[in-house]
Length: 383
Image (cartoon, rainbow, N blue to C red):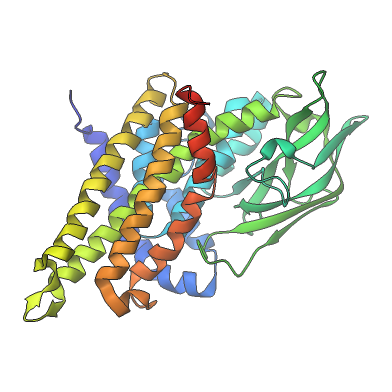
């Protein structure tokens, strides 16, 4: 079994790593402190080709495989979770649904701008009373002549209210099915549509330099042609989108854990107590050994899930497993990293403090750890 990466993947990894260290790392702490989304960094990441990575060149994308995309997210997350979140959400949740389910006209209208990093697009799924129970969506869309009239709200939506945000894909209830369940559909809503407002959320513990939004729809009217795919297929579209999104969340966990390990190992070899580097004390050496082992295991699991997707094989179970394991593995690595730093690990001057905070969202976003276990249990026939 050949587990080596291709030359192209290695070149991509080195390119994104060098960019992240040179361009993102010097700004990460200050942007986090000010809760500031950076248009300049986003455009720079676009110039590097970090948006529309798996979208064909016909629509302005990079035409890469999923493994290449995941490696890129991993390397950005190794330096900063906020910028990795911008990249991951733009690729997996922003452009992907339009690429997968959109009409030719919708693709050509939106994708070139989204693939270049010129603009961002959100995925309006979560609501105040519909998080893990996404099927309980209360936002409604009623067809009135040639327009959809949308009412409701969304919360915790990434990339939807930045100054370069172009719009959002909204999951809405468009009727009742014959079995009595909600008919759910996805509708494209551009910024500036009458009755639509996107507000930036502040005061976050995590990903403070990424853009997070609350969305409000009050008799919001958009053309009926803005329906994404077929009416009533919104739930299926959402599940397929989340399958891919879970790979990117896993990549953020993997990259973040690697970042924690890198910093912990360096600090432990430099910090001297009792006349020895603290890395030489077995209790600390074992922490580092555990981190290195878990990171390697996580990488193999995630890369296998990417291989399954790239070869057209079912990958839902492996995506859920990778998301669950990588996110919780980063939690353990971040905890070890802070412990190894001692009191300094609690100070913003040291990057592990930010990694420790940023990790938590990985166990919540795009399916909580509890939901991932339900998904996996169902797929192995336990439920």
